[in-house]
Length: 131
Image (tube, rainbow, N blue to C red):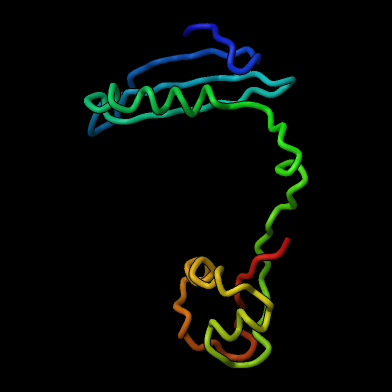
């Protein structure tokens, strides 16, 4: 392993090969210490493709840094909530009854494993997003 600095933080870079039952994998690992925490990053692919992807792995791992953008720091997390359907309707209508924006319909359909036109019975459970 090689000692490094990543955006002022102590780090160790390790390149290795791992053999599983079917193939050999090339692995690039970074262990980055920030205060009392150590963050581990691993990028891997077949040994044949490793040289093609190593620079991408390296860029992601060495891009790790503290967030300084105040707008990002002030952002509230979006949480998944489970709600009970109050009245039988199609999925899109149910989402609108929970004030979900139309631009989230496709994502919420995937999250719920449904299509917008699927019918939901009263009492069914759906996943919605809330801040």
